[in-house]
Amino acid sequence: MLYKRMPIEKESPEEVGYDAIDYNLSESSVTDIRFEELNVSLEALKLEYIGHRGHTAFRKMIAAEAGLDDENNVLLTAGAAGALFIINTSLLTEKDHLIVVRPNYATNIEVPVTIGCSITFIDLAFEKSWKVNIAAIEAAITTATKLISITSPHNPTGMLMKEEEIEQLIAVAESNNLILLVDETYRDACFKTPYPIMAQKSRNVISVSSLSKAFGLPGLRMGWLITQHTELMEQFLAAKEMIHISNSAIDEEVAYRFWPQKERFAKAINNKCMQNFEVLQQWLQKEKRLECVMPQGGVVCFPRFVSNIKVDTEKFYRILMQQFKTMVGPGHWFAMPDTYMRIGFGWIDQPTLKTGLENISKAIDASEAL
Ligand SMILES: Cc1ncc(COP(=O)(O)O)c(C=O)c1O
Image 1 (cartoon, rainbow, N blue to C red):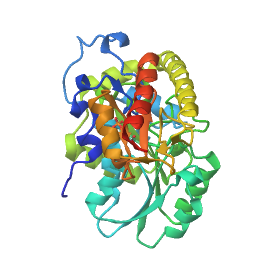
Image 2: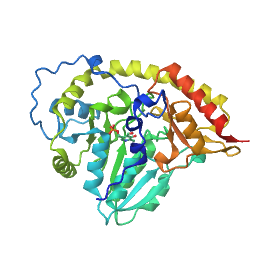
Image 3: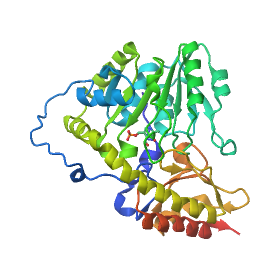
Image 4: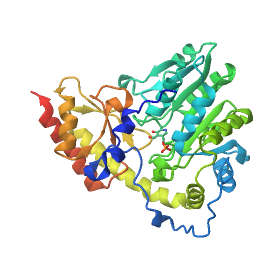
């Protein structure tokens, strides 16, 4: 496969250097947790090869949360990104067809693009409140369609699909003998997702998630996929074994010890995020040069410049970064015009968020053509 680096990774804050950014509004996760906060001692941990499916007791806990009693329905992966790579490369070849929602987290699109399969994009529109057009997905199915790929809560918009809508897609997947991939990486971030983990509903569904976004542990690289489809699971395991045999013993042990504490962390994290969300809302009400469909899930939103102003976007992002040391996610990270930007409100503290948002207003002042 001919790999090409994605702008969202090339230009990411960790690649730019965290030290160069004072106001980091480009993150899609909550505040990163320090190892010491977890109260985990690893001295006795043997650094051996570990079970290829992943830590059994940890998988049992994830399966239980998904309403499943078989831990072999869960495969631990290197982040949700690892799960998405395994699923896409296992299911899709050049001869296959994929239906995928756009915009999206780049990997959900770029891995299939790299595979070279044919793709129907289901474009979400600001004017339609980023709502997924279920009928359009159904109409796009061909005899070559293997996979339908959705993300809910959605990155970069924060849109949350309704349970009935996903159920409709599950019925479509079952009746057409397809697989429905539901990227649920943001399901526990900030707002509570009001429906169960979708993999419990059907053999045709694969759920993907991780500890990165909702719990601030992206450096663990701990994610998973869940499916009741045993033949597919065997194939996913084969893919994982070919890529890296097993995960890191350290990552899995830390994740396993974190899991029973997660509700305690989640409470403080979500309180902070909701307060930050309030700050964001107040700023957006004041900042009339941007319009936004407010998010219902996750810790990001995807506003755009209103159409009756002219902003030199190249100048805007340059000034924002160089003069105000403030970073947001420009539209092109999501194959969208740079008149859109992703603002993350969960990662930073409230004073930093307030100043970062004011800096966006100042950068618009400096780049608006009067
Ligand atoms: C929708 C979505 N899925 C998956 C990922 C990958 O996250 P990770 O590999 O850190 O779990 C991201 C990261 O931004 C994402 O936004």
